[in-house]
Amino acid sequence: MLFIFFWALVIGLFDLGREKWMFIGLIIILSGMVYQLCVRIRKVALDDKYLYVSNYIKEIRIPLPNINKVSENYLTTPKLIHIAFKDSTTFGKKISFIPQADSLFSPYKSHHIVDEILDAKAMSERV
Image 1 (cartoon, rainbow, N blue to C red):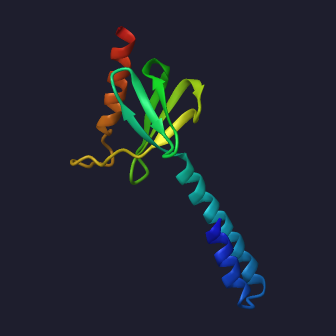
Image 2 (cartoon, rainbow, N blue to C red):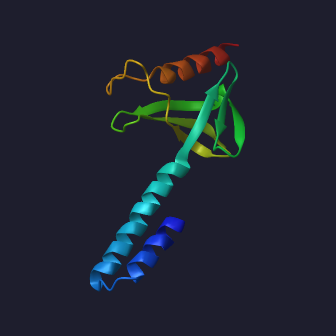
Image 3 (spheres, rainbow, N blue to C red):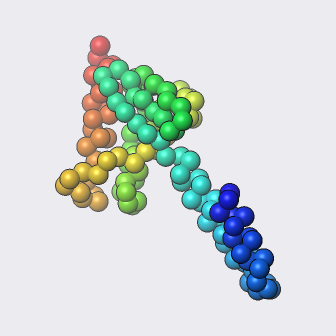
């Protein structure tokens, strides 16, 4: 938000006429898009029973059987991993996180963390 007010102040110092309002609108739209992307990103850790999800302020643990679907977006760099849950959590029914980069990076190859989460879920359901 501070970013928006800074640019509004800078634009106010110059008389740009109509272009000023188009620039202000563009800055507000782009700031909103960056904010939405950054707010959605979570920090994720995994053990044999739980998925630990954090928004960098609060951490919750989610039982692995609550995972409904794990997918990834191949079109973004870095890759985004999406996890959908059967039941709603504190962070909603779907979270996204950016995994650590693979040493053998391939944009069309599935990230190994997707398989690790699915394997951990399958193991927890067998017990």
